[in-house]
Each structure stands twice: as structure tokens, then as C-alpha cells.
Image 1: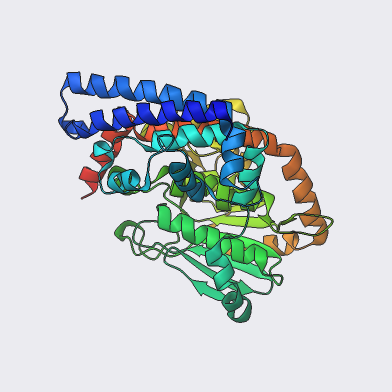
Image 2 (image 1 turned 135 degrees about the horizontal axis):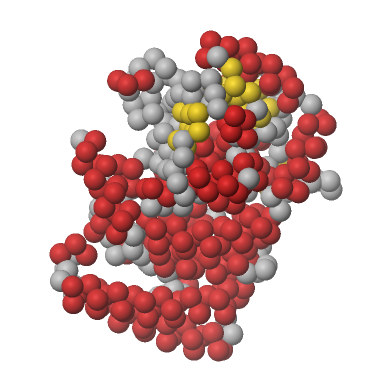
Length: 427
């Protein structure tokens, strides 16, 4: 750390200490008077301005210090924890985050916004940002531990995802049958593990994602792809910024696009493979977001797609970055800003999926499409297409701003009110 940044950091740490003392002396957020809310808001605005300026000025040296000159690969959760220890006042401490995790969303102080400020600054930095993206593309420790079992048996069963290898295809089945495969932190962890295993296993040539059969009363016995973010868990405070919202985008979804990072060979640092998805019933929210990164998508003719994040008040992952590329700007705005639902049997659905078939023909269509994706030329060309369509620098710039804007959205009064009403109505 340079002398000037050391002086800046001491001032930041002292200012943060004063804000923490103020917040500690106030009632919980929902119990505060208007004057107390104004005092808290003013104090937080001031310290967040200081944090924004500090990380914007010193992002590269902070990151170098935390990663030993970019020789260590820290994932986003590891990075924010390391920053909390090395730079008091810059991001929340582990104790502060533990206290936040114990509260409903409406009762939190919004400390994840400070994590968003920090990660936006790091992702924006020309050297630190790409290195962090590389860190998130490396295989997880959990996947590496499970790899020998998967290579030998071809089967790994997790809480939210079932993974099976048959004839060179890794079949990933979303199996949260009680909640229509609504997304939470467990599903993100299981999906990244499954994607890693599929990419790491040399006998897998193609990956395939589909929803399993449901036990939910409304869809009992039917396959469902994904119902989007679990709003009950968002309301209860169990949808974290770092371990869900950012890990999902920078982790397994980006690995489907770019491949998994390894020490590599002379010709590539990544191992990538073709991917396809099959949609039964519906792909809502995060489910629809996923379709934008697959090489081939098949949908049942009675299914539909929607991205209701704007009506819920949040940002639909990287859809704002990717959807216009598929549908054009007008349809993208109708879907994201207006909440338009697209039915599989209407013409615009062909902008999102490659094949629409009757439900009873899904299995046969899947096998035909998988055969078409199994080829070395397919792998090379999809790599070049993804490079052209989604340059790394564009993705990095989007995710830098997403880190903060999504943090602000999940603490917005409109979002808290909407998801609280949903949670109460679903009980």
C-alpha cells in the first residue's frame, strides 16, 4: 500500500467507525422514525462516497495486496472477506455480515451495497478486473473433490441438481421439485459444481440442462425448467449478493459461455464444450436468462418464457447485456421493461429457442439436437462466436455496474414491499 493510500485508508476507517456507532445506536430499520432514517441515510451516503472514491483510486494496489501481486486466485466471497481484514472500513466485517444474514431483508442495514461498491471498483480496474473474472472461472474445490467419483460412476446427486453422464453427454437435471426449481444459493452452488464436473470430465463432450418432474401440487408429475429467483428467500434475507447474485453470473453461467479456466496448454487456458437446454412448462426469470447462453434450445409447444425482474424491481442478471442480441432492442424492452410473456408457439419465441416441438416429442428432439452438437468443429466455432458476440471487456464492464446496481435494487423499498407481500401471500 502506498503512503498516500495508507493515509486515505486511516481516514476511511475512522469515518466508517463513526457511522457504525451511529447505526448501532438506532432501532432496527423498520422501527426508525423519519428523523432517524434521514440520519442513517445521510451518514451512509457520506461513507459510501468515501468508499467509492477510495476503491476507484486504489483498486489495483488493493487487489495486488490481497492476491499477492495477482499470484493467488480469490473468488468474490474470498476477496471481500480478505478486504474486510486488510482494509477495515472498506467493506463490512464478517461479524457485520453474519448479523445481516440473521435478519429479514427489510431489517438489514444494506451492508451488501458496500460490497457492491468494492466489487464494482475492482471489476472496473484494467488489471484486477480480468484477473477476478479468471478466478471465478476456475473450478471450485467442491467440484475437484467430487471429480474422481463422477469420472468413475458417471453420477452425482445433489440437493438441487442431479448430474448423470451417458454416451458422452452430461445430463444436468434441476430437481427442486417442491418449489418449481426456484433459484437460491443452494441451486447456484449445485449448478456450478455440476457445470464444473461436466467441463472437467474428459469423457463428456456435450452438456444438457432440463428441469425434472415436480411434486408441487400445480405441476405434479410434469417437468418444469425454472421458476426464477426464490422470492420467499429474498424476502427472508437468504438471497445474498455475493454468494448468489454475483456468483451465479460470474461463476457457472459465465463458465457455460467461456469454459472453465485451467492452467491450460499452449493453445487455450479454458476447457469449453457445447451446451443445450430443454424447456418444459416454463422458463421464468433466471430460467429465461439461462437460455441466452446455450448453443441450442428446445422448447415444448405449451411452454412460455418471461423475465419479470423489472416488475419485481430487480435486474435480470446479464439479460440486459444479452437479450437484445437475440431478440433486438424492441422485443427486449417489452420483455424486460414491460414484463411481456412470450409463448413458445408465437413467432417471437424463435428468437429465444431453436426448436419448438409438441411435448410428447421432446425426448426425441433432444437426442437429435445432442447428436448435432457433438463435434470438434462445433466446439471451435461456438468458442469463436461467443468471443465475437460477448467480448470479455464488455461483459466485465456490465458486471462491474451490475455489482452495485443489483445491490441497490435488492434493498429498494419497492422490492422489499413486493417480495414481502409475495412471501406473506404464499404462506
